[in-house]
Image 1: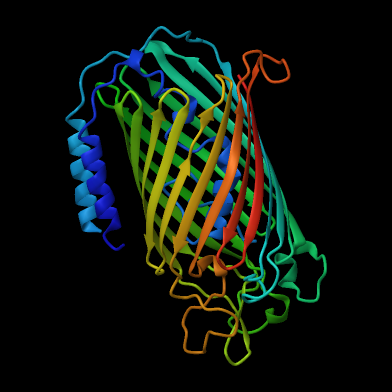
Image 2 (image 1 turned 45 degrees about the vertical axis):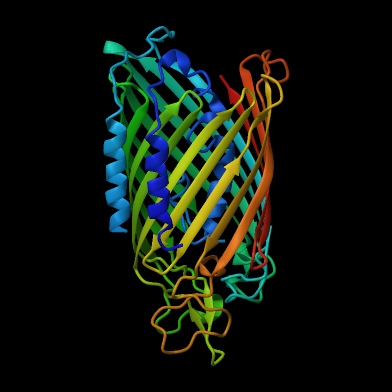
Length: 71
Length: 395
């Protein structure tokens, strides 16, 4: 478990080593709104409560600061 | 940790080697005057229950409801040299009621602290050079509650690779907050209790992202954040009961360094199924380490309807300053009984429904997207919650 981030980074390198250049006209699936590499607006409150109810935050487009989450 | 960064930089170098020349699409309509691009309305209802409230020292109800509404308006215009200017204005209002914060006064049964309203406007500007694949952004935000005030600012920069298949981003955010020092009623006026005025809490966030299109169906993104917090990081109305039965105000260090590292991927499987995955490793200097894994599978029932089941698993270790009710002793420098900082794991499971009818929602053409999402959250220390959210988009 301790070396998990290293293993993940290594897997990412292997995975991305197989990438090919995709032309604009080939991006109809990549440009599908549900393929977006970000959280959607409908997830906004979920991300807030997760950052309040859990000890960790960040790297997910959610709250990293601002607002109390006191309750 | 050092190995993670070395590996990360090696990865960026490797991906950059794939960059090739290609021109941006310049056929889309480009308004020269300010034009409303889209308006989003997002509403949520959230409720939770648990038995480990930090306000009552780790024992007691955590019952809470929150109704959240936000409106987000984006306007765009194209300037000279086809520079795209995006202005984004958002205003959000939350109304919450909390049985635990009602217990700042233990004898109360609907005190002034039993509910509150949070208002959070923000304004962001993004300057996008589509020809060069470069964006610059700047934004400000605020968040106001009765006992908490926050002002935030951010600047960002991103650059696409020459073949437009990769994008590197950097962002810096700062939040300058003020916490109103409201102590539990019975502790007010006692020595060493913070019970008047305000205290500052500052948060600085640096983010690096890199996204890469792997092939026509698959793309990935990596993100590394560095989050530094300084100031009053306790909450003044959290109680801590010691082994001798005495009650104290929560006390936590005045600095915290957090490092989350994340990877995200989305894969189009066949013609109707998308697999979205997310993983995050997190560590901080309070002793918390966590892992988050999230999978969502949108299935396109038709071109206009998709259903998205999702599941998120989270696990964390406890902060070194955490102990439960009547478990801290007088030798501790720092102490909290906030179960959000305890060791636990959690599951979040639910379903989303997304409608994009060609004639618009309710036949109104510009209301072109409706998304509804429900999720149930269960934590291993008996906190449970439900959330339902809705997003309506006008475009």
